[in-house]
Length: 76
Image (cartoon, rainbow, N blue to C red; front, side, top):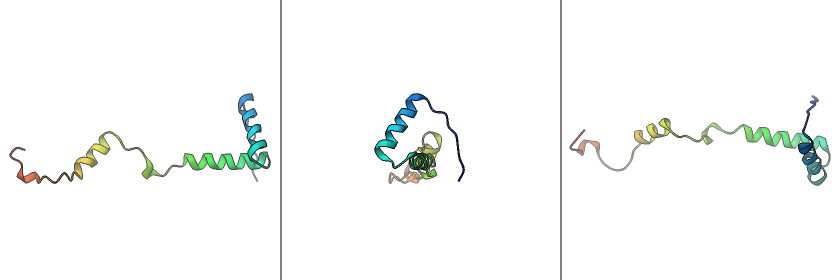
């Protein structure tokens, strides 16, 4: 299993130690579960992206279903 060395600020180290004591069996389990959760949260599915701006506006206009027939309009 690969080993990694990380430097933490005193505050982060204190928070980590407290989490280990309260929620995990040992530091190894805490590191593995916290890293896995962080990686999973980072890899968000593409369809969950916030689509704003030009792309969303173009899609809204392309699939406009307000019920009005464009050929019935008097002006272009």
